[in-house]
Length: 565
Image (tube, rainbow, N blue to C red; front, top):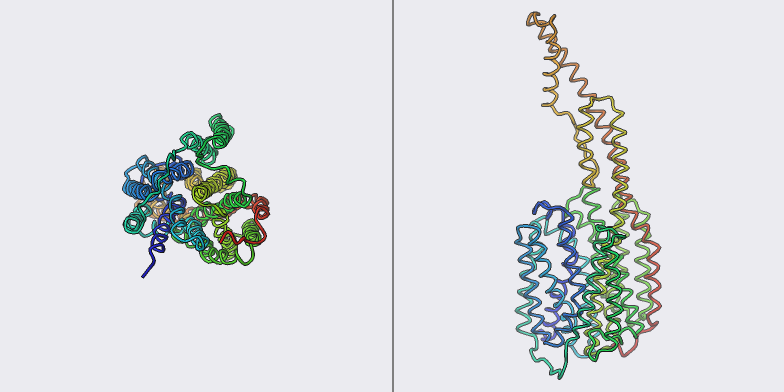
């Protein structure tokens, strides 16, 4: 019979899977949601961002609430909130309701995530803790990496609402399992109190910081609002540190940051998250918009990265005790660097080149993220253990937010340049065509619309259709037959003129169609190259910064300590 602790860990893994999956599952479905709710992308982006913003800013305070009020009770409330938010999001009729649903989801996730880690870890004896921490850590990375793949598949077969509603049965399973197997005895904590000042300050710090990261590009990095948020975040952080150093029961014990290995784990969590999410956030859009693939196929195309995380996370956990933290983290960092080197130089029209990059990045991330969770826990127990998991969870969200901010901002700037260049090229090319002014206007209208949608031009085989050709023939014939000499001509002459006009217009239409197709094909080739470069350029710029990930390895010990086992 399955041990009770195994069942509890299984329920905690479901909770972690749901929380982390929903950080990325929505990305690939954005175009379908935009059409379904008839909204613009700027408004819809809040449904994506609010989850990250609230998750990052509330994880630490709500983790502390669970410690004080009882993890089991608060955990069930978190599951219920997450399930309610999923139902609201899946059944919403407009984007505003979707944003509310995602906010409720995020509140639940901010409760479930830290409590899942602590409940799972403390459900086993000390000598089995490393294995459980590694398993829960693997689930975090794997769920986030699988988000786009699962999102693409569900959107293709069940529609975009399915990416939210599929959470409900999992929430019900976890809820029933927790009611049956969790221990409801909450230890007496004497005069334990919530650190309300610290909670408020960390929420202000993270909320303002995350808003800067996710909206900096939209609002302008030098705008008064963004600069004000940066200043507010910095001031709140300084005040938070001072408060935590002087309060009796701090929400985030600063003792954590006296541990060199915990600091290394925090840095590695942020940086590896940036480079992993950087891959996941841009490439699905590249495959759908530039290469005109379906959401499902785009999701499948990035699956090699997810599979490598699934394979290498447990392997790296096993190697941790054999090789030591430094060598394991170094090898993972090196693999991610190699993946970015391939990304920055590859020809994405050859899928096998991207697959190599995805395998390297996924393997590197899996190698890092499994041990990182164990290393972050260190020898901490009790409140320090809870705090360490909450803080690492926040750093993971900060890594995700940084990746979205950095890569999407860079892509947006690059696409603006690519659009301008492509439109200029299109106007110049079409202007030189020996076709009518109306045909030029019609051609440019189609091409401009496609470029505005950040898609490569997709010209039809016959820009001037058969129906339009017949209208042109009729108009040309009426014009010719208006001639006084022909108005009185016999019907046989008029029929002959009609045939001549038909032949001439048919030849002209054929020539015009061929010229338009040739021009549109050339524009398509050049626009595809411009958009491809816009998507690839962020990876080229990011490549040197992967060295930072490599440098974090010196925060870790060469060999593992027995105390960690």
